[in-house]
Image (tube, rainbow, N blue to C red; front, side, top):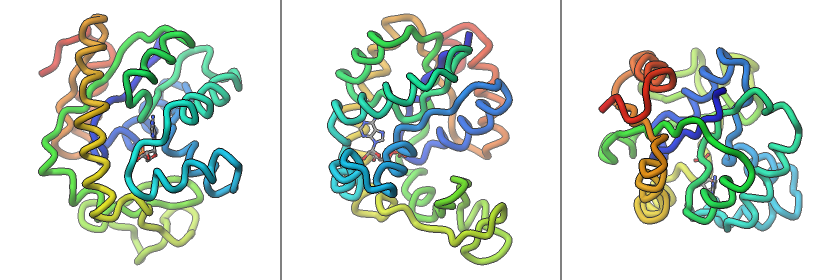
Length: 216
Ligand code: AMP
């Protein structure tokens, strides 16, 4: 069974890879960032609470994130597995998750922070279908318009340089220690996340199917 978690810093390519792999494996791609952005866009009470944290680049409080994820998991399409992208991000979330479901593997996207700032500030996303472009490395065919559905692309509010620095700090302080937590459980599989998406995809596939803790 593929009950997978994608761990790694902002901009490491988790979302891009999760979308591809989830499609291939026929399992849902569950991104708490996407769920939260949808709640913000819909103006739900949870979305209104979460918005100011997201804009500033801070983590959203654990209870809100656990709530939105549990509600999503309860929809019942994750019985054959799932990819959690961007959750858990704190020890408390990891412990809450352990009470909800066992995991088969945690893929740790390993990439130096120095390569990430530009990936994020050059990133443009389609608010409708979620496709992610990069003005330098994966530009849309026509300026600022989604290739797939013609929507106007947006710079995420938290991809501005100030918020990005805060997100890196949150990652270092709160999320990076989870690698130890999962290594101790024997399910951590590091993936070298440098290079082109196709190259990372190949490494990821090997890490998903090979023995845990092989790779780097
Ligand atoms: P992402 O799309 O995964 O980069 O998430 C975007 C933003 O949503 C993060 O910077 C946080 O503000 C918030 N967020 C997403 N997932 C979580 C989480 N598991 N815990 C706390 N905040 C989260």
